[in-house]
Length: 250
Image (cartoon, rainbow, N blue to C red; front, top):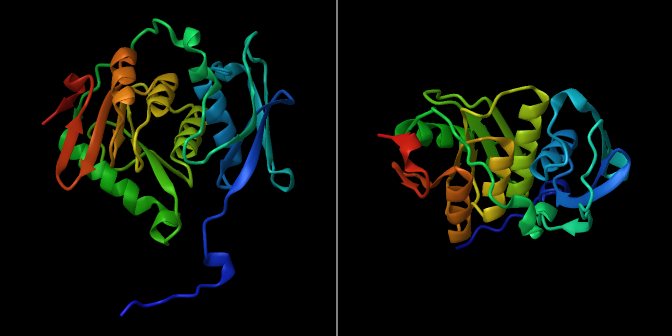
């Protein structure tokens, strides 16, 4: 017989809000996601869109919870011709203005790295991500994202959101704010890898992207072009290396 639970309203479901992102007081996007970690979310999104890149030009990121908004101040501005997303993007399948314009990602320079990752270490780090995801482990519907170095069993950073795109934006944004170099590290995500997520990893400069779940064929094709190693199904003692396999050993 089924056990039926009736939890208190506050614990019934994960929080979800439309979050407005501004760059120098100009609206850039409205992202549907978890209402926490907003400064790193905004910074990570702007990085993935190529709207900011120079850490020395960055001024601050200020969250205004009562407005469900976050304001980023920087000496950098959106390039001419950039089309902002003045609408809510789904927490599950956020759309990138950058990816909509194929001309802006033509003939990119592929990522290069001498870093090599042992498959056993990837499995250990993925398990750690699942263990260190607090909201996930208390029953909330969230995705976790982690950052790990070769040979390390402890992740350098972990972030969460109801959307896997947002979780990655938060982690990349926090690493950038902390001046943490990701060019020799791997990104770990609990959700599937889409082509936009491969592009986000590339924009962050991270050469390896690992998922506990699957990856789309477009993600594999895009990752191969961009020089990103994709690893899927990282669980139960196995990994699937889908692109740039020379970086995975063991």
